[in-house]
Amino acid sequence: MKMAGMQMLLYLFCLGSVQAGKLLVIPVDGSHWTGMKPLVEELGRRGNQVVVVIPEESLSMGPSEHTTTLTYPVPYTKAQLQELVLPYMDDFLSIDTSIDVGGLLFSFITVEILKTFTVRNAESLLYNKELMKTLKDWDFDAILTDPFEPLGAIVGEFFNISSIYMQVNHPCGAHFLASQCPSPVSYIPHRYSQYSNRMSFFRRTVNMVRALLQPLACRRLFSHADEIASRFLQRETSMLEIMSHAAIWFLRFDFAFEFPRPVMPNMVMIGGFSVPKPKPLPQVSF
Image (cartoon, rainbow, N blue to C red; front, side):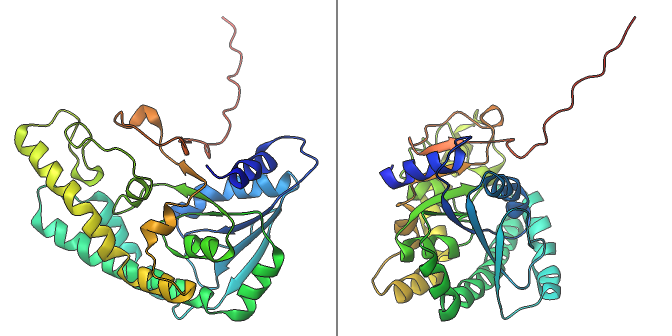
């Protein structure tokens, strides 16, 4: 892990720190932002200077407490997001793609729709020269982003600041590919396969084939993003290369609900961190 990333974490998460940090936050819409928002607001409440950058049109994002919110125009409306993205995402998360060929095709269509919106969103901010200059002049210590969309990772690379990724799950497993995390396919089922860790020989074979195809899926998913990143950073690069530079990964998984698997030293599971604190049980007398 980069030393700058370690120092930034100390600035952000130590109670009573007299030296606050400057944090840029580029979130992702929907449940991704719902899970990140409590952390962002808490960091602002503790005295850190937190700047959240969001598109003018979104499903769930807006101003948050103890932070500065900046917006940028995008070439789509909230109605278009509700009409095109929400129905596909609901079905995508519930469909079994392990046995249904139609499900695989549906997943492909969903990824293409998501790719269209994420690319438009990325170009809208990256080529907003006035806003990008404002962010550059802010001289942030680090960026907190969700790599489900490529925008935050590209901005962090451009500003050359420590990138802190907060990841729920990536459609092509980019978090494990980018970090070169070991993944023994005989024991770890693919997330969308709905297999258990006790697979038959046939299912192990299918799981291995899916694992071999995973880098191709990432290449397809990031095809436009790789081009945008290379053009904007003025060098040949890819999203997997950029994401491999992460200072730390906060994985919103709960180890109790995951199959045992090796993770890299800069990966931390934080499942359940956004759950409200439980209230004390009432005293009952018999």
